[in-house]
Length: 150
Image 1 (cartoon, rainbow, N blue to C red):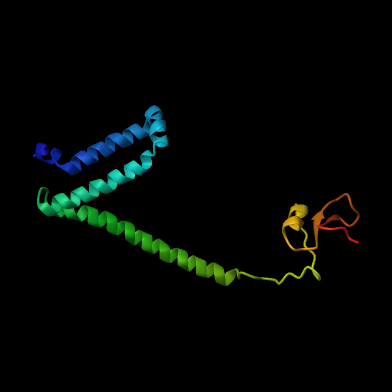
Image 2: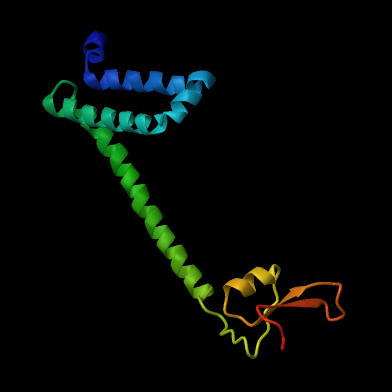
């Protein structure tokens, strides 16, 4: 009976997957397999195993109950996928209500902007003056301008 199951395509794919994952785990061949993209190939082998299990159960080479294995695995995956999608949507909505996108309208003619690395900000944005904290000045700030004050 064991010989019958070892002759199946799905069992050969599973055995190859186990050997391949063992080689990936070892340091010397693992590093070369990693550079060769072994993780994609291992994922392909997993899907090939479940597909071959499904096909062999449908054609009757293995018991029909084995058809439940890929259905449960993929069904569980997609159930978790959609559940997490709903959870992310709920969290996004919660964040949107507690943290609105625009809090304050900044007007550079009325307000001052204080930040670190002010010079780079002035060069890349349309703000006439930005203040940078600096203890060397009595006011405690150094003004960065794209052009001189005059």
